[in-house]
Image (cartoon, rainbow, N blue to C red; front, side, top):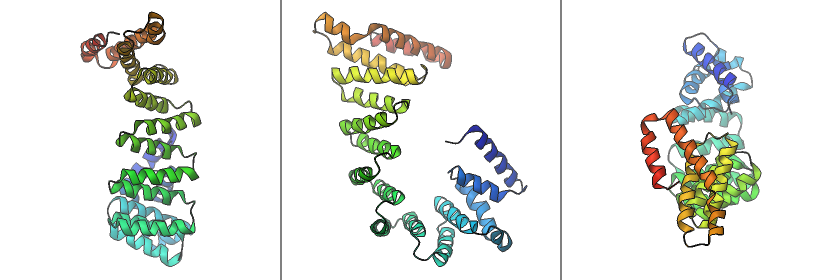
Length: 303
C-alpha cells in the first residue's frame, strides 16, 4: 500500500519531470518500487532515456530493468511495436531467460494471440511449476476468453500450491459469485477470515454471501459478521449497518410461528434499533436530502 508520504514524493517528482526539471530515472525507479503502473508516463520518460545512448549507458545494469518496465508500459498503452523492440533487446542479451519468457507471453496476449500465449506459459511452467506469475497469467487468459469455469479450475490448482495467497482467494470468490456459486464463495471468504481476521472487507463480503444464501441460520450468522465489520471499522460502515437491518427484517419474517423464546433469541431488537439509528445518522450527515427516503425504507423493514 502506498503511504501518503510516498504518494506526495511521487507526485512531486512527476510534476518536476513533466516540467523539464530532470529526475526521470528517479521517478521511474519510484514507480517501480511502489509497484505502480503510470503506464503513459513510464512509456514517455522511459523511452526518452532508452533512446539516448548517453543516458542509457549511465544506467549500468539497470538498463535492462528499464527495458522491461518500458515494455510492460508499452503493452498497457497498446504500443506493441515499442514493446516488441524492448523485448528483442532483452532476448538478445538474456537468451533463454524465464523472465524474458514471461514478457514474450504478455506480448502475445497484447496481440490477442491467446492460444500461443497459453502454449508459451505452459512451456514455462514445465520448467518451473512454482512460477506464481505464470499461473496467474493463465487465469487472466481464461477470464479474458470468457471462461470463468476454466479460471476457477486453474485457481484451485494454484491454491493447492500457494494457499497463503489472499488475492487469489478473493479472485476465486469473485469468480464463484459471478456463476452464483454462493456456497463455494462463502468457503473462500472463510479461508480469508481465518488467515486475516481483522480485515473488515472479508467479514462484510462473507456476510453478504450468507445473506444471499438465506435461511434463518445463515441470516443469524450474516448479522454477526455485519456486526464484526462495524466493530472493525469503528461503526463507520454504512453497508454493514444496512445489512443488519435487512437481516433483522428477514429473520423476523422467517421466525413467525416459532415460540416466543426462539423468536426473542434470534431477533436481537437492541442491535437492530442501534443499527437503524446509526444509518439515519449517517444519512443526516452525508446525504440529508435522502434522509426521508432511508427512513421510509427502514420503516418498511419494521426495524
